[in-house]
Amino acid sequence: MVTLKPNLTLKNLGFSIACAVTLCVLHPLLAAQTGDGLVSGVARKVIRHAAPSAQSCQTRANDTPEKLLECTQSSQLWQILTQFQQISDQNPGPDGHGNRDTGTAGYKASVAYVAGLMKKAGYKVTVQSYQYQATKIVGVPEFSTSDENYVLMRDWFVARLSGGGTVSASIQPAGGSGNGCLRSDFAAFILGNIALVERGGCRFDVQVANAQAAGASAVVIYNTPDAGQDQFDPVAGPGDHSIVFPARLTRQASIPVIGVAAYSVGSELLRRYASGDAPQVHIDIRTQPTSGTDYNLIAESPFGDPNHTVVIEGHLDSIYGAGMLDNASGSTTILAIALNLAKTSTVNRLRYIWFGGEELGLLGSAYYTTHLSSAERKIIAFDLDADVTATPNFDIYVADPATACNVNEFPSNVVPQSKIGTQMWTDYFNSIGVVSGSAPFGNCGTDSNSFALIGIPDTGILTMQDCCKGQSEVDIWGGFLGNYEGQVPGNDGGCCDQPNRWCDNLSNNDPFVLGLASKATAYVTLKLANRTFQATHP
Image 1: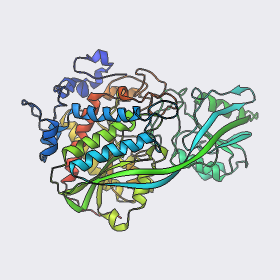
Image 2: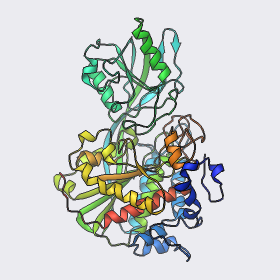
Image 3: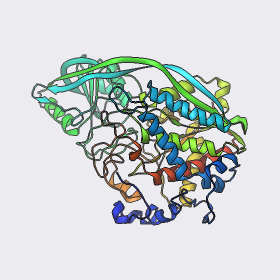
């Protein structure tokens, strides 16, 4: 793990010369107030007086960026994040590890913790419940040919939301470009074969849906030879084609889905098929249905015009344990902002939401947005999402719907009306000399995507997770090639989305990055809260 501290040298950090003109040179300035948070560059002023106490910040009007950013303090943020770790530790799962996953006591305790603080601060708090259905893997999945047993987590992963089943059938690659993104790619597909598709070109959901429609009995999605972050992979973008990771579907598949397998695995299966020796592949993925009640926590400010409401949100659930980086960090960011704006009048109404079920396929935000009435939908002027805000080996990305994997599914107003959000992030980071950029995958994999689908303009911030940071990102933000978090440097996929590792704990977060991202989020929140919105949306 890399922890950024003022007394570390650029050599210690592994930062490149290229980033010296951006974050590296400014790191000592940004972290000058190590005890009380980061110095804001918005006003280009040095804070010479003692920072206000948390109590003072939460009882005064923080009606300017300078006041709000002064109150966005590292000590407060870390205290909140630590509380989430304690909640996880106090609610271990059956494996003995702390847990805040959907459906667990740890998640319910997280809801209760945030709800208590928001009620005490004066917000109108509502807990929205909904029923969810999901599946979980039982036993040890198998993937093999007659002469090769592929090793789980070394050669392949089971895709999240994979269907279950035992299949033995011939492998058959998709036609066309080989990625299965068009239904015509399966025009010659033989019913019952196992579809082989290369990652990229479209969302995993589209590849799987097309294979299912063609009668495939299972799907194997394999990595590309030059894999990197692209528009269609919201989580992992390995720069090494031997690295594998769990493909994140957002829709439950009805057939087994292997993904993402190593390029070496997929290319060898493809070579054998092309040579006329199509191998018989055996896949055994056993799943067990799960269901229950999940919860979204909604807290409404008493201030501002309720007919022009800005939603500030992030997901509260974890996956595979404590979920401190993903996404207790984002939950901490918006909770700290909400507490510091509790007594601040704004032009627009602020509504904070902590969603459940994000890790199971954006369940909470999908339920919330699709159950809004037409009138309720129209009063939401904008949405801001905070999803992972404390990555040790970080990037600074904006979840811009313009580059989303499913941008063609958004109503036509979303992309143009969302530009103001992207610009606000740019303005803030430019003011402190830090580079930011639009995420290659846009808002895919984040709850803001659910808002975009119903026509609500949106934006968001994320500092990345899993693996792998590429050379172009190192050139901009410094750090190391490989994992964004977990073992840094390393290239084993990190902690957040790796089952049975149980390492996305408090130590998987960087306090400097948490402060940096939270200050930026506070700035954009206040700007949106006081912006005059005139454009309409569906």
